[in-house]
Amino acid sequence: MDTKNFVIMNTYLSNLKYIVLGVFVSLTSCVSDDLADVGDLQDITGPTPFYNFTDVSSSEFDCNDVELWAKYEYNFQAGSNLAVNGTNYEWTVTPSEGVSFINKDLPILQQKIDAELAEIIALEKEIAKREFKLPCETNQDKKDVLEAEIADFEAKLETANNALPDDIMQNVSNLEAEMAALTAATLQDQELIFSFPNPGNYTVGLTVTDNLGKSEFIEKAITVNQAVPTIPVPEIGEPSFDDGTLFDGTGDGRDSWRSPSSSAWGNVFQINTKSELGILPDGYQAAKFPADGTRVGYQLLEVTPGATYVLTYFSALNADAFGDVTVSIVSPNASTLDEAKLSANIIASRTDNNVGRVVDVFKKHAITFEAGENESVILLLTNSGVESRLDAFDITVKQ
Image (cartoon, rainbow, N blue to C red; front, side):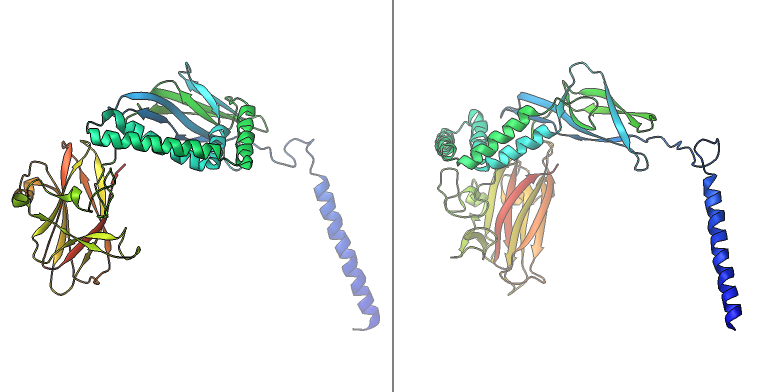
């Protein structure tokens, strides 16, 4: 291409570029918010409100299941669809009589105070646990131990309070000042805590209004349930078979596991002892059952009728012959070992053998059982074939 044609072509392309740019500017200049149906589309999307709530109620009962107090509190959190941000929130509740509202930050600040006073709170809980048991305890020896433990913890609590360092006391003071300065919760808060006066049925509504003034309303039926006593966790005596773990600091690791009659149930198991921690699942001792199967473990547990429990424990078996170990939950109607083996008296049972097991390696197991109408059950430990060991029993209430 010669120089003349090259210049002409560049001039043409340059002119074409400005023509296209001019057309684009001309078209965009026609977009005007002053002209109907021309330009931006009207935003007709309204808010879509929703809310979540969490039951944060609390209550206290005495050892006879008599209610001492109950707080029916629910944490409510409002929201709207992501495309349109709600800028105003308005709650309603029906019936509204007696309903009050709590600033959402109040329990958060209280938790921070508790964290600063962790040692104090822990001691107070230990005292409360024993004070809870004391009024319903009928065994004078156990009452004496509980009272002595309470006195000991109260002395430790006084010492801990007196030894609080200045920086912690200042932190607590600052947090208490923040709590005092909190604004009262209102029905216009995006998140707040409803405190209901009584259990019952309530209707909670929410109106969300966006920044264009559009509003939507939703409501839900909320059932506030009556507070019920917490199901107590049964106490397993000497659960890890260590010496000195009875309520009064005594015990040889198996005193809680002796049957009412060795002739009817068999002799209590032996004890396997290790000199160092970490070898056994817990502590220094485990229950040992000789290969001949003549030894048993027997313990009567108090349970709550209708409750469901999860029992966990660890087992280890030798491998010189085939053998197994069995943990059973037995009806208190059984009065002998033979009766305990009848299917009518077995509430739940688990048998583990040594197939594929490694010697001296403990494995954890679990048994779930229902108390039914029983107020107590027998925890029965047996084995056969090879020397077996059990350790670290624990029980929880299944929620």
